[in-house]
Image 1: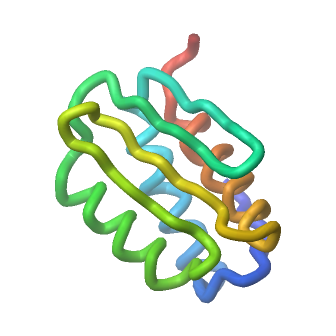
Image 2: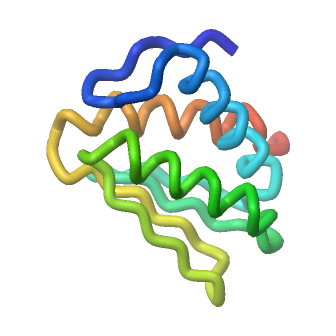
Length: 105
């Protein structure tokens, strides 16, 4: 998957590709991915791999200061919000990656 540069993200091209691949793996167990103007909500059909999710969240928190991430294990729901407009390109990339791994609707 080709990954464009994302403003404000501190990952290099290889890091972006790897993170997108991790999001695609999460997308494979997503029941839905909903986009709102300020963020994304991912509802998982089954609990995502804990190590994978922990890695994705740690990397995202370290590289994209414009995003806020929260996971509710009881609801199996991941919320990703853009704190300002500079986070929109990152949300676009994350949404594409999640949807690339999601089963067809």
